[in-house]
View (spheres, rainbow, N blue to C red):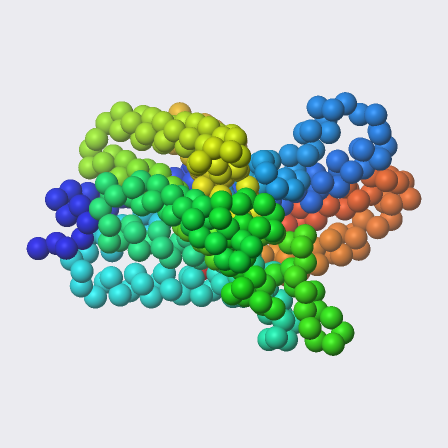
Length: 414
């Protein structure tokens, strides 16, 4: 007798053919991440050359910069979309273990999950945790997008494997409420108690108390002591609740797409694709409306909770998940239902096929220095446009590396 969730509904394995929409959306996220440096440099150069440029152009380039505190920009979408996509991939790799009868195959699933979590954590420390300095006293334990993905991925796998589908959205909502309630009702010294100030919210206080010198943004003094940089306001421990919620929203959407493919393999008509599209689109609208309405409540209101990406508030989770769901629905409609020509997806698929390589390359290798060696002579001709040119060449070199890997079918998986 099966002990897996939803045992009464047995869905055959989905075909191995990849969903183009998932690869395109993953590539779109990588494009956003890799283009931030170029767009920031281009915006600064334009502002220098044309100090009177229109407000609309200025606002456009502000979308490629992180919002200082409250609010949300296009740049702020990159990290939530990474977590969302990590969750969306879970059903395609874990469904066979969900159907298992609870035997030894489940252990193989957890070996795979734990290996990925460990590798992501190490990569995160390499990129932003000072691991490569080889100075343990100055390591940053939890400070990077990859580690947030590891947390979201681990708990989303746990929920996917052991909890019935009907509870997934309930758990999603519960995580959001848990974060809000903790910040509302728990006080840790001067932190919490309903405050969403930059240095007075509960998430900020918990990170200071727990991480100490191992928190990112710490400055070491000559005598070996350290001080916290007040300008660093990103949080990780309490925010893990909403990291999981973000990944869970992707997992729920990915599960809908996986089950749709399985039904198609079992002879269902194309109408199931449209139902999956409608389901994801409706979920997107609900998340966007809830995020915007809740996020705009006045500070005096009981349930006040602004959209703040730095601490990953519940409203930010709803808003970013809504955008991610809408983008997934659009990509699914365009590339898996309408079947748009492949040349439209090619550029993004190349990026998404080796997403971990695309993310790590600019951090580990000095791509800008390589680019400078190739084009340094142009500086005398392009003047202030040299820096944007350098950033563009760096992006182009990264894409060509990924294209070469894709061309020879070399895909790096964790």
